[in-house]
Image (tube, rainbow, N blue to C red; front, side):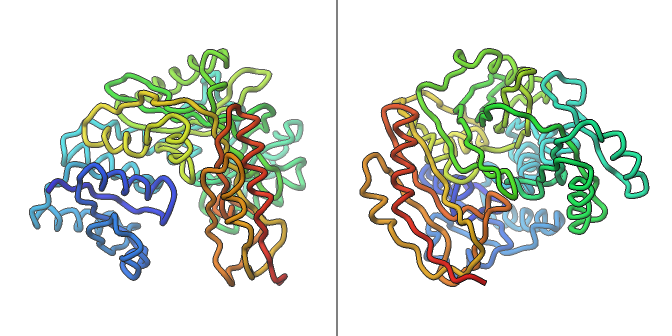
Length: 406
């Protein structure tokens, strides 16, 4: 039986959807993971045929596990990961051991935000940025930025809005730099201009140098302690021709990275200076993105990613085209979760397709400082973007988190 090896996964979302897709396509699914839950609760993850526990931070240990699989006679057709940390290694292994011509070279750049900015430094779509390297020169570097506020400061390895801070002045900037340096004093810090304008997530699939846009998703940003995406809209009203310059910008970015076979998603903002690249990630977006796209267009992007990694041409032909909106659930206070009510009522609301919550009884929940601190979502369909959004928000209003303050 042909096997696909997954380097890491989350319990839900796009990464686990990839495992489900591989199983549905008839492959044996092998998971290399450092999370014991996939062994301890095997009955909950029936789509996984074989779990190998190891230290995923140790490349040598991963390579040793790969050698073991080959010596056991496993017919591995590809290695794949939907998690940033392991995407480059998975693509490299697929390219070298499975003879699938994935473009792995740019992936290492994409997973580091400073490398990405530096690589694209002279491009029109790259916003102003600066790298703070040493504490010894911080005074001089901040003095150069005194007329540039507001600014965004972030860790080069941030994802899901974690370690991304808006600073309005020099005092806030110094405070933010100290905060990031406390987490890792060795890492440089990326400073970027703060951009105004609507923000879009673009799912891209590249096969044999042919660039396909799998989805254009408008993002709704909630500005609290961090910039958190709480709303995603994918609908018939969003198409390339309606957003002048978007197609050309996407093609230029992909060609600048020399991506010939692979997937990624871009976050772009339409500013008064044109399209600007907020970030690029060498994978499809996580969370409910795969579900949204399937409900909107009828194709499963995780499944098409599996096809690409096994050397087959992805099929992005739309079976239908309808408006989908996903509203994410967050809390406004810190507390221990006592209970969640209203989920069944939310499911019964007009247009609601799915209600998902992940917070457990007794769990400490907080206002979001990263995307991981969103505690569920309501996904709804409608005849238009506005109607789908109204249905999703109406469903979300039925749900109540009861907290014990701490």
